[in-house]
Length: 274
Image 1: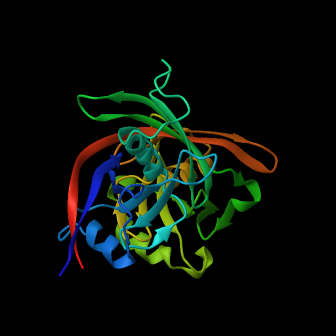
Image 2: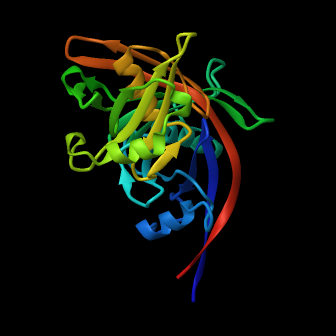
């Protein structure tokens, strides 16, 4: 039996956690089964998802591929996109605005849903944490549809958003699991977000994520979708607070930017037995 060492770093974006692997210097066959093993919370590293960083695409600093904890690839992950920017910086990837006095680093990268810009606004080396802003895809106004008791839209992946009372005690897991597969949300289903505006004006969001098939403590594309449909900017989740900026046009919602916390948890190696 052969054994390979897979080097990785573990990050979280508001407690939405990821294993990130640099494939530029360690080509690796990351199968759906292997990714699920790595993300398993009892038998693996444990994570909501896994990302790979690779290069070789002209005009982009790097390429991001994102996989849910079940091993299946998804088009985008907002918190993942913010985390991989810090990972790229840690790996020495040259960006567009490194150490210019205003930002720590700025990257233009390609994900499965298209191009993104990520700006590391602040980083504390003692706590290995900081703030990162990510540009998100434009959203067609016609694509924000009333479905069931809420809204359906795509902010990189499809999201359903529904307003609820007493969000703190809401049964997110069971209700999210029930709604997630309803035919009105499309053949692949959608992530399910439950939202409630707090007395201080912030929007509280709790998300059931497909592919994870559980509640996650934060979801970047879900936070973005929830902010867009409610037209609020300040969002809180179990894992941390966000700001979502955007501009409503006649046909498109543009200049969508997601800003929130990122932390480096640890680095390690994972033994793969072939």
